[in-house]
Image: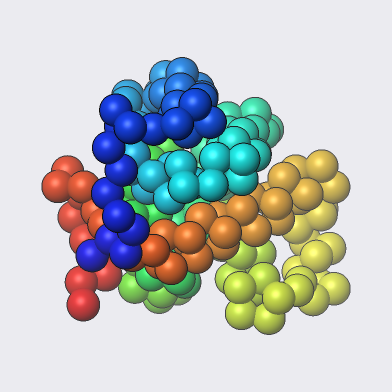
Length: 189
């Protein structure tokens, strides 16, 4: 159940229209088709100044980082599952599979079981995300392993990506953003 009053796209003010145009003409729409008011974008239309910044930041993290797609999607799905953010997990589980993440790994992420990783970089992304979610920090040993595997630049990108998807998950959950009919609920009540 969406807690927000439905928006009429024809009644959007100029700032809202500009935000919607930015989302609709950006890299998400180029890769995934029309976004519309789905997911966090419909929420952010209520605060378009915040929405512009948030969607632009997310576009950089999704489409301009050097992290492999599979690593990004494992981290995003780990966050989505932790928060049981239905829209986030459903959307990114599909993207994880498309990026080559093993279906058994995606299912384990959904249930918060230990995933059967074959790819070391995906396992490490999961370990980093899991540690940050559970303990809000990385212990020295995990930090050294992550820095050794990813380097400082990619580790900064990974940690930032994890934090951004915490924002997305909390936004989706706070406003109970519904799943579109094209998505299966990964966490039925």
